[in-house]
Length: 420
Ligand code: HAM
Image (cartoon, rainbow, N blue to C red):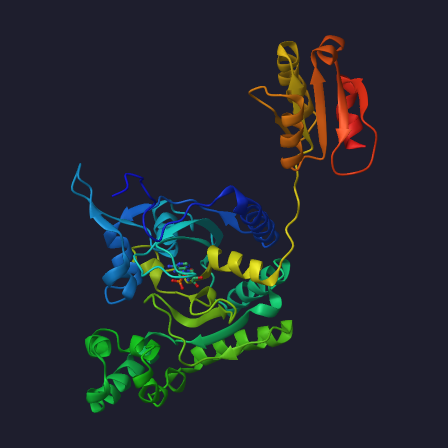
């Protein structure tokens, strides 16, 4: 047996080779969020287990079988690694009284944890970017979120690879009516229900509609539709959302079977899906959850939001061949000799003072081997310093990516030369 320690299954390192892609994604996302006036919120990765049970729902896959839950050995508290961000966001808003002066538009980015069976696009530690608008009741906010999604896909070069599916889950009363009809319908066809569905029949019959079991597809297709139970207000809200999408020219499909795997939703729910990533094709999902703030002990406040899976979007960007913005080093500082090494440290700092991106060669070695490293670093210039140059307070600047002569100049003039 090998003694080598490995990462936990389903939890990945982000390697330097992928840093460009992650960096480009995160920079685009931050600008996009700013352009809509959203503010960042960072919450702890650990929360009390009760938070997720109450927010996501006891009879959901996430709470029943996917949470990393443990007892804190030091004080016996029951804690869970966050499986998603909405619950934490609402908890933090209530605890810190963030809604005291009206609605808030918030965003977060970071790792989430679900003990699922790992496969392409499905991990046990994955990353989400999420937004939550707390305190806004109208369909204008749902529309804003859908427009935001559409804009981001465009900015990431993904517009033609994702499609939007929406549904309305209605309010509490229509859901209760629909639930009763569903139970009656499935009771009448009990023999056709698989084990999962039998278990959910009374606890969460809506989730039966979400089944992937091929043998149950006909049964589910003919089940009573929540859409038929929507009251006037829910219908008006849903119509307004669709009108907003039409006005903005965003294509969508109404999918009456879209129910989501978390219990806090009402009214609008939606998913952005792609057929380019195999089975794990949902890259972004969310909707309205008007009851959650009150359910977690806050003063009632409507809310809506969504979260996207970063790994899935990056995979899609690679699939789509989204060009990466090249952000190379400006200079690699080659130094041969003892005096040169000391001078090179100062020279590199001076260039950084001037705003340049600089890697300093450390650890000595021949001129030839250092030049090879300079080339491999991707830097635009090699800054060459020997004892001779060090003594004169100068450096030789050699272009590595373009034609041009090597020039020896005073250190004071190097930054300008490189910038020009
Ligand atoms: P969710 O649908 O559970 O919703 O997750 C949102 C997105 O996270 C998914 O569409 C998917 O892209 C990504 N994701 C989920 N699980 C995994 C996994 N195991 N591996 C890789 N990616 C994954 C929520 O989490 C809600 N909090 C969204 C929301 C925000 N609703 C309102 N506000």
